[in-house]
Image (cartoon, rainbow, N blue to C red; front, top):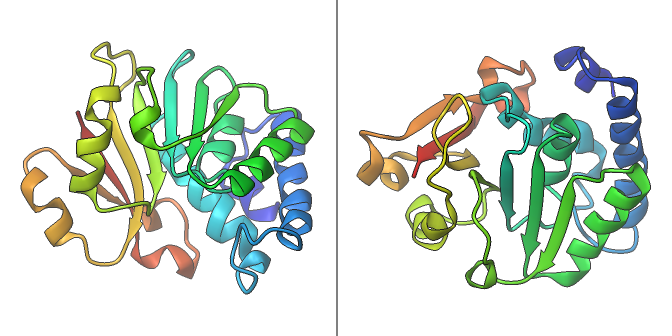
Length: 206
């Protein structure tokens, strides 16, 4: 929790407690279900929780903002963001039911009440959302095709509704067709750890 406290000193006691539950439960669950690579579970705070929270440095979701976490797996980035923004609503979707059950259990035990879950393909999702978030799920053009219909036309945040992706590596080819609209933000602008040297937030208004 040291780094979460360092970069997010404004967290309430309740939020800190919720992150503490995550830090305790993910390793326990990972012994049963491989939600996070077993060689990486020791880096849970930096590589998974803090990485997810980078989106909270890029945009502060207003109350009642609706967010879809596409391909959430065991709950990233959706659960850490739901803790950061308790007055927003997060819908976590994944096609792998056993990973989604881990996220559900952690949300329940941590008292994260502003989340819902759906074991489904994105094509089955019906509601509209202000933002779709994801973490290295698929190339940007493929994701745009799938989620454009889900983005609400009504904006009430500091940036227009759209897609927020956590990505790494070479992105030039992936973002080329959106060059006039896309914003690529270095996570190293917010967090100093070496892990974030090549990590990006890709924001595309839709």
